[in-house]
Length: 173
Image (cartoon, rainbow, N blue to C red; front, side):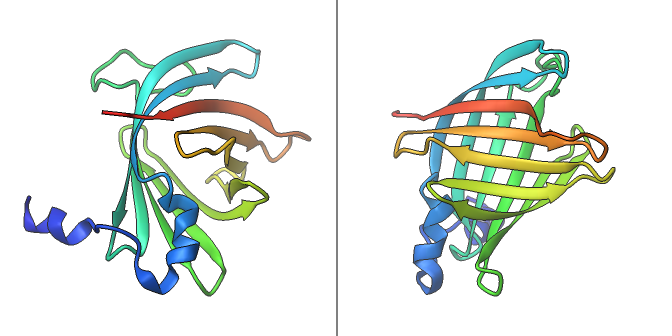
């Protein structure tokens, strides 16, 4: 392992905020995903994907990589486009919440959100560069699965619209 990787990765949560870090830390590992993109007209497209979560930055953050579809260079996934991006999820004790940054350089998509538990779920909320609201939620969370919902509410729209939903299962290999 290079020095960079060795200094980036961590073996587990930092003990200072271990309980709070569990919110996203429970996802650490490798996941197979079924992804459905939803067009505004009701059209749906599906593709398989991979998601990988790990501890980083002295165990003070969780970083994940989402690859949809699984193989680089695959034809464009309709509606949502191909994802090859990473999220850095950092717990901020001054907010009692998580600061979330998503980076997908291939699509030039960059998002900032604040994530918090909401009942048994996790809800992340933010705003796009154009002023649309975003809401990304982890629901139906178990040790071996979760359902992720990506919703958008354009500034002029009255309601939220489901754009992408992901059903993930922990890889057993």
